[in-house]
Image 1 (cartoon, rainbow, N blue to C red):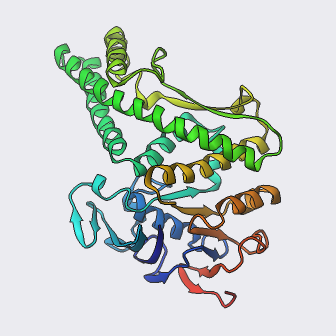
Image 2 (image 1 turned 120 degrees about the vertical axis):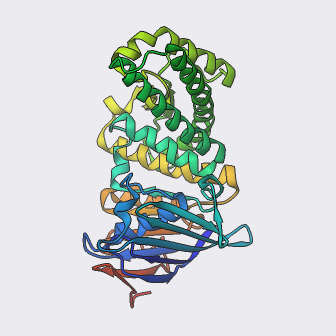
Image 3 (image 1 turned 60 degrees about the horizontal axis):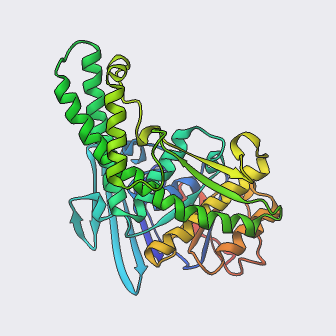
Length: 375
């Protein structure tokens, strides 16, 4: 798949524009704070209807404006698609082939995009919340069922936590209603956990291959999923996970009421990354951690292709300057000829023109985008 045309209105500092992209490589050059990241964020938002930088869609609307629009014309599996997302201060709406979609799950997944930014280098050593967000964003865009259950889980979790707070403050007393909420939460949580195991199994396989191809060390990379309920395992089906979660909720009912929050579930799960059996978060060097982060992104490309038979868009937001020459070459060689790639950079010095032969180059200055003379 590739994004043929892209248009945006009132998106952050970007002035209204319409671009036609190269199906292979597109490079955006500009100084910092000119709009390069905003452009990649807008493309990412077109695909996932969410930003990788903020949870507030209102922040995406240009200052002084009432709405923002992003449009895309996508070529996919011999079919042309038109996508549109409208952002207002009241919410957002989406259109697929000019037909408004009542549910985001009917829209998300039509265009797949993998974003790699300097923040992703924190995936290994950062907080668990980063890795949970990673799972929800990446798995959600390739599987409508995962997106549905992950969204439903957040809704029920909020309901239960709100009620736990009421119980803690003695503003509510009905423990039977708490049991009903716990039962609902365990059912949805089990669906999320089982799917995380499934997708991480695929991702682990592809990440191992990617790590071997870009690392000369011979070390073996392993991804491990750590559910917050200790006795949940990869062999458990949805029904078993449901009963284990429910048992945990019952066992810790009084403690949850005391603390006013749900103590276990997908919102407390984590992933670890091991090199030859050692936790890379604790024992990996910065170079090893960056190679793992890069391997995960390359594995995502293969995972999307495995599940959709299409390669996703790859958005590289100023990461070339963060990678040494060897890792840059490994990245560019790995993706060459597979994905439509969008690269932001302050200059072309760090990009191998031996691998990227004829990129389409744009310059961005103060939110204005124009085709560069060197193309």
